Length: 473
Image 1 (cartoon, rainbow, N blue to C red):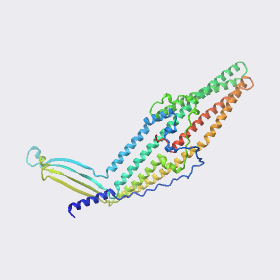
Image 2 (cartoon, rainbow, N blue to C red):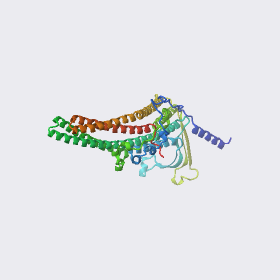
Image 3 (cartoon, rainbow, N blue to C red):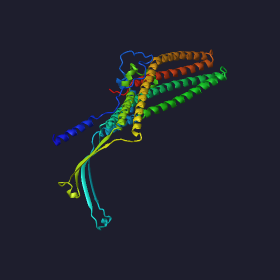
């Protein structure tokens, strides 16, 4: 075998060993999901439905006012913007680790002049030595025979993928938060209208009771009770106005911009007028592993922790680095590229850990503990997802009946109030009966609005917890 062929073969073998390397990363196995095989009391949703993860938010939130708010939030929300920038940062970190697998080629130029005689600078005796060089070479390139650099690259890749999944999870949370904030504003408007109507009714009752009191028909107790309920309604109206302004401020923060005036146009019509949201099948708890970005992010963090063990194991083995260069050197700058000025160096280095006071072992123990932490966090993310879906399914199963009962009670209380008002005006019933029916009607009407809000927000929660909200059409 000729010398050139031998050199080529040796280079090819070295390159193959570098590219293949030996990986010390433990074999990854996805932990079993620590949740039951089915949701408690889950019933299949009626009708043909699409999984939440494949249903774009535009197809789930069909009201054009809400769709516009979500678009504004996706474009302006600062938390989502940070999530996107985190992806860019993680991608850059991955590129850094990936680049470590390849040699970095540098071009360097240097020049120096020196003399052993300190008086030379004054022109007294001695000689001056000059040295100039230009070199092209590789500095401290690690030949990754034991997979340390490759393990760090796999770790960075998994962290990058986890960051991407976290961005999707952030978008899901943002879409759901905007929807809930908008529904809350509509409920606030409905409650404001209800409180304003109740205040008007109580003020009329207060005037009527005042007239009856001045005529000696009603007692001062009845008059003071009517006055108390009227002032209570005024206090409730002021409180509801404050809550409405605070809820609008919270929604504006999510949007990253002021809430458009048209976003709540027609809000006094109530939540009943909203178009129904699609019914979603819950599926099985195992479906969440592929549909929830937060679970996928936790698994990528687990994969990263697993890869970190490979890097920690590789620290126990020799580390081979290569420094080499080729260039030109001369004692005269003008002769730098003359014939015979060629210079080269080849300096491989092998570092074998002998004694490090347990540092490498501690690093391996830390990596193993980090993997166990990541396993626990992954399992916790699955358990949290299971609980969130189960809660949403429980709400879907019960809130409808609760709302139906409250609306029936509200209708009954409205009839009772109307009859009490007629009886009071006819002098048959006392003011206490009238004011008690007013108070009961107002309380039930408020509860009905709040329950309808909870029902709609529960639908949003089910869409979110099943992994919907990040897919787009």
